[in-house]
Amino acid sequence: MSDLISLGPGGEFDRIRAIWRRLGDRVQGAGDDCALLAIGGERVAMSIDVSVEHEHFETGWMSLEEIGYRSAAASLSDLAAVAAEPVAVLVSLGVPKELPFDAAPDLMEGVGRAAHAVGANVAGGDLVKSDRIIVDVAVVGRMVARALSRRGARPGDGLWVTGRLGGPGAALAAWKAGQEPEASARARFANPVPRVREAAWLRDHGATAAMDLSDGLLPDARHLSAASAVACEVDLDRIPLHPACLDPLDALVSGEEYELLVALPGDFGEAAAFARELDLDLTRVGSVKPGAGLTLWRGGRTIEVPRGFKHF
Amino acid sequence: MSDLISLGPGGEFDRIRAIWRRLGDRVQGAGDDCALLAIGGERVAMSIDVSVEHEHFETGWMSLEEIGYRSAAASLSDLAAVAAEPVAVLVSLGVPKELPFDAAPDLMEGVGRAAHAVGANVAGGDLVKSDRIIVDVAVVGRMVARALSRRGARPGDGLWVTGRLGGPGAALAAWKAGQEPEASARARFANPVPRVREAAWLRDHGATAAMDLSDGLLPDARHLSAASAVACEVDLDRIPLHPACLDPLDALVSGEEYELLVALPGDFGEAAAFARELDLDLTRVGSVKPGAGLTLWRGGRTIEVPRGFKHF
Image 1 (cartoon, helix red, strand yellow):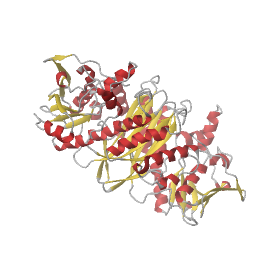
Image 2 (cartoon, each protein chain N blue to C red):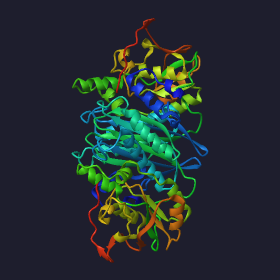
Image 3 (cartoon, rainbow over the protein chains, first blue to last red):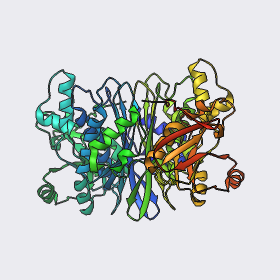
Image 4 (cartoon, helix red, strand yellow):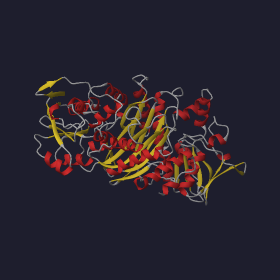
């Protein structure tokens, strides 16, 4: 049950720890972004990720197609986090009976778009009447090479992130203030890209640990720190900001980014090659040290850790 | 897209057909109880099955542990239907915030019990706040021999069911009338048994087609008929009734049985061996004929088909 320590602090994570404790040795392979199952001679990666109306999104923010896309992309991002090759998705839909007949096909259109974009198919599903829209997506992938994990970061590694952070948080903040988000921030929320190719590239170039940014850089760096049993330091002045995000503190708690947080050995010199080949930024935001926990730096000194974004 | 004809008539099935039509060739492997995926050198069976409070159950009927068990058993039953060997389950839970901290562990205790009973582990999950309890279970299995399918029934086969039908329907009827169900009927609803060993036995003894009874014998026999492109005849006088079920018409529309409906060649002579080895009835309820659709017999004559139990 070493999995019990692979999450950072927080009420949601306490609940998950309580579940793991109760299940004891009936849990297997959990604690990373995907479970890795040995099925015959293959290693199969699996994950599940549920999106529920009023908790993760409102129908006023996005089309049903976008809601379906986004839910599937969130789950496919877990396959990216372990550098698996996506194979299939299975989807349970909850659909309010007040919605038109086409609501379920519209949601699944988006699911199909997300799956197709990373080479996966829709392999099955379930449909139920529900008072809120529910899109629950289970994903299956194949490990064709080494799996990435949250557990491998070593003192001396650098901490890196793909892309630019803070877009989804800026979009959420605008919607919650009753405004329409800036278009590029809205796109980061409604159309996130699972970093499947990027993860394979980083694995092939020596990444020691990886996870996807779903809770936000602050809580996620804590998960990585706990899982790898190392200290993590993040320098706020280095966080690459989405244009709609003006404060790195906002970027730190912007969830549902679906970018990658990666540990790379030493002074990894191939970020420019990554950017050139994958047309995406790769930015060093901090370092892995001996010890435990997360330390934040800003303006050359350590700062207090603000409370993270909580979705439970 | 031959999958479009593998379901019987009905509003819920029209919705599913509309989804399949929209997805076009992005759907793969759907239309049976499980999708069969080729992953490297292995055939992997997968399915997903969602249970939602007020749609599939009420908390006053069962403990949270039983709700978790039952939801997982329903999904594991799909692995049984294709004669797969269960490997793992992944679970998304929606839990109202008013429930005590232990609600999620209690639900997962039941999921773990169902998985463990058929040799599977819990490999991951997701947790979200929700106004209703949601238990969505994705299951993964390995095909170690021929897969059973809804598609293989041939004219001349007999139609058989495992167990005795009508228990879950009787329990539901009692609860909906504000009464406590008879204990053995309640157990059939709260603690259904995925027929994993039974399906493997039937496959090894020549079953030509199979599915699990989740919608009820009437709609499910129609699905089998449509998927196999044959006519099915069911004799109500032959349906083996659970003691709490007095009318075969009730047994016909009792859903969530999770018994097996199987086509077996000719006058299959090994039902007694099945009963002896697996301690469960195997009863012939009808025949497969050339043609299409479902015909019901009672008292030596055909009768009108009543409307089936609908959960959408």
